[in-house]
Image (tube, rainbow, N blue to C red; front, side):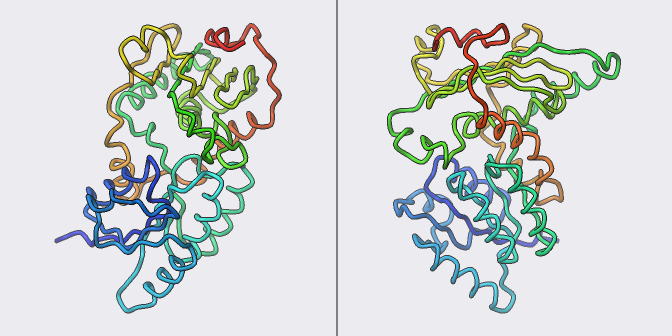
Length: 322
């Protein structure tokens, strides 16, 4: 018996992450009916869904979605959302009120109170909100969680010491775009760190306390105490802070997590995680509003905190900045 084709719409078709969603829709055997983006250079759609309707104005997209689902035997089941972070809440609401489930990129929203309001609309609409927390589906990270869970069964009070370093260099365009506007992106911690904070709190427990040591447009750094871990973290889009040994290889990204001084390797296996996420959602799994709460709380608190400068809890890379 053939699986029923699921119909999708997409809000935000021109960004870096949108092609992964198009690929996931195609690789799960489903169809993209319509896409929306104010930028109209979307040639990538020809590689995935050239027949999809495309709109640069929300009002026309809204009208299309409304008319399309009123026609007999037609239904948009899911609306995928890869728009700028500050628009996620509004676009999720649109999806639910249009009778579709929402699949939204991280960060799901910028503030915890948005999640509470979305729960109300979920209940009213009978539809679901899913977020992409792809690191929870990474084989190496699942293996780490299983290892830590086993160790904590034997020693529930164990506290691990972690260093999280994530540097993904960006050009001058980054700070001119919405990503460089804290009100729109949530800042560095929200934009590039939220999925790491989700992963760490998923494995080591909820956050108990936080410090912020650096808060600049290109770099955030701080310390958090989780239930079973002390975490020094450093996030930056500044190429100058990437270790020289990495820069000498021509790479512009450095990703590292150490657990009790042991390097945890998870640099591979990222390319297909959106397809894996879609398969999980379509088979009845997926991560919802409650799953997103820990990481949204963390980044929301970071945004409100004043930087302390270097302390005894600071990540070693802070010396590169201050």
